[in-house]
Length: 276
Image (tube, rainbow, N blue to C red; front, side):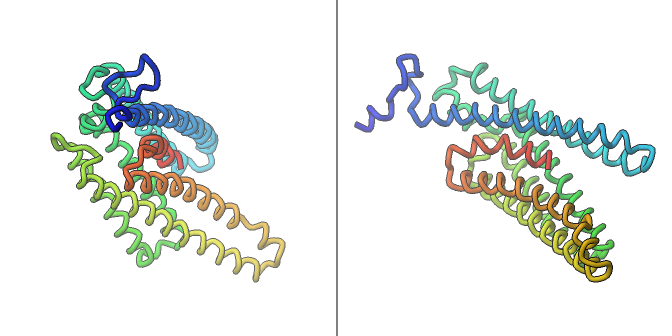
């Protein structure tokens, strides 16, 4: 009975040497790549909208405008490379090596350390570093460059960089993939620390902004305090952190439990981190 279930074919044309579980993994890999492409489209739209706005602001504040233009361009280029690598690895999995022993799912699991795929992970890690770095800079600005308050977030930021580098080094080893036990430990540590840093810094920033709004309310009155920009800025930080953290948390849970849904979430997570 086990043998019959393991060789169950969803149609007469389905691969004879693959199980239903293999086919489910392959479907999720393709679906994840498609969703990642959709997320990349959203990222591209936001990039061009921001670029258009920043170009208009060059005359008023050229230094800041060019700095942010360089920043969003870097993230867009890295996000484009990451999306391109995902597409290429799926071509290798489902087209170039379709007769790989065990099928496309076996190729995806066993050849995950292919240099282009590892490079794609590295691109998204660098994007994560730049996003968290910008968040820390905002944190410093809002706290009037009080360097003592940034000590703990900076240490967490450093840990996330170190663990991501260790993960890349581990993945680059022959016969080692992101699904290997050591890689799983590094990946979960990196993702957890990165999410923790984002949430911690966001909570501190929002708390500071709401405190400033309260003080403004006491000084100038209820209406002016209520209409202050602190509320909208706080909402912006919360929405950005919630989206990234929610997707990252779903990935951590599925990845830690070796759930095939992780392949549906991972391509989306990379673009969400870039665009937030």
